[in-house]
Image (cartoon, rainbow, N blue to C red):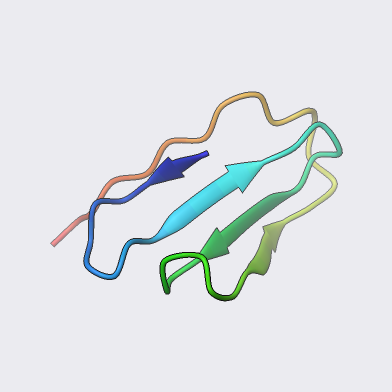
Length: 49
């Protein structure tokens, strides 16, 4: 799991089922970003702007 450092924080996590999820509101709600990937062992995020 990682955060992008924004306010509110964007949170991201991946799992061994090959899915990546994201939240743009400090974790209040989540959405599936990607699926059918190999095992996701590491997720990184950065604020670009």
